[in-house]
Image (tube, rainbow, N blue to C red):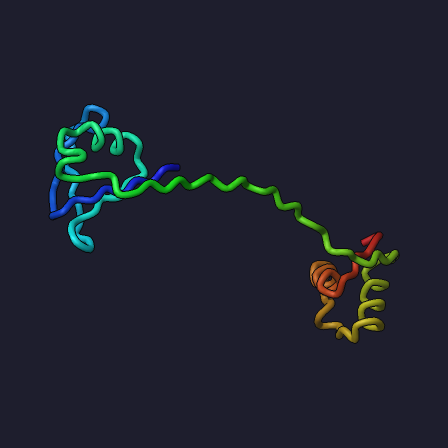
Length: 126
């Protein structure tokens, strides 16, 4: 994307045709004059084709911004310790023994799985 900065010595409004549509472009007060900034290529062309270009206002600077390449972030699964269990009771017993969990924390299958995941454990057979 190209951003262009136009500068005038005083506050001005420029009448241009952008893609066939009449527009009034207002330069805004800036240090020692006025400034207009745009990254719209149609506006840039209209301003640079205007007879006032390089007379009442000039191109002050151009910034070229390269679009960033989107990097695909791979979602890494945490390294979970896999434990074979025969049912909920075995899973509960393991978590109580290894992590001092209480039965209230492990009152359902979902709670058991969440607690295990938070502690780096995955149960096989649940």
